[in-house]
Image (cartoon, rainbow, N blue to C red; front, side, top):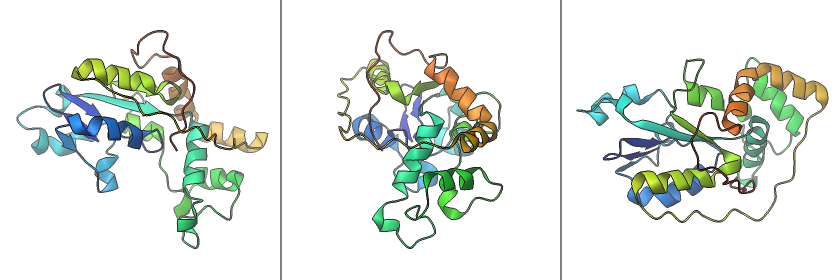
Length: 215
């Protein structure tokens, strides 16, 4: 999470949505930057009320919250690849010895094992509400719009990092598993449809770069 005090602006770092790349560019201009622990670095929308003393004498509600959301299936794929890294081999968080289908089934089960504890973008962005608490949500497929917005909002030149040219291997699911996922995370898929349609952001028109790879 990055806080830009004079502009009353907060960047919310949703995990696996290019947050590291975004923060690497914007951190020098932030008045407050949470790098650790993860619960602060990835503080959720709607939790600003817990930091009232930090924002005093201002009300946290005065600060605009900006975030990025990723296609839910791609987001799961990014988590799956991230937890298949050799450094996690032999740990309870490793996905090295399971299939992507098994990972998804574990994520949506009633009591997920450690490797499937990843939360959800919907809860991150909406807290305990049915509608987003975040003020602006940009789709990951148009992540450059985030940099453009911050450039204008902060009045600074922003050089967006180049996307990783390596293309991640696409991950797919059997129709039955995909249907269970869609049912289990219906609200998240519905929210993403709104984000992708541009209903929850006001990014500059016509800017439609290809999907980056910031896993």
